[in-house]
Image (cartoon, rainbow, N blue to C red; front, side, top):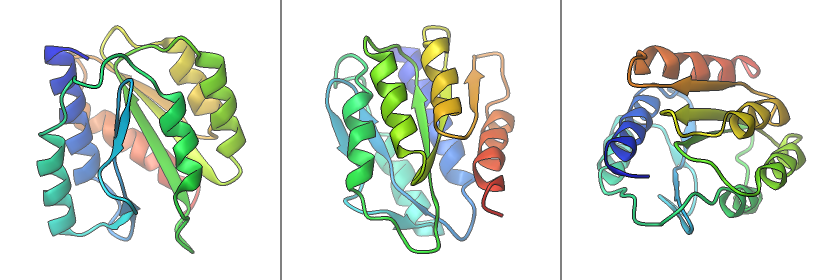
Length: 166
């Protein structure tokens, strides 16, 4: 991720954080060739938790190199599920990966325990990867460009992600 693309991704992440359902938990994984969790466990969605998370997102930079999604996807199964709170994962990316079919397969393997949605930011994202993540993850995929209304698109994916559980 470079320059404007990382800023667009951080903007999108903040919109998602601001629009999470009130009675929910969340976490963030920053990824490149490495990955890092915002927190070691999911956090209850409160105003202060959102403020802290948005502050953390400002520190995200394009310093992990490349786009490696497989390892962060595999790590999702290591986080404990919270009873009565179905897990929905939203993968926001602006890139492509060399192992698309492996990522899609792993998302499918997780789909009985969690829903996985895809959000592609910009023009360099893999259409094949994101569309198939949405299908394999039993959710949906959206693509966001500079011309799009980011808040509107974010609400679309949040509604799609939570409608299965309401």
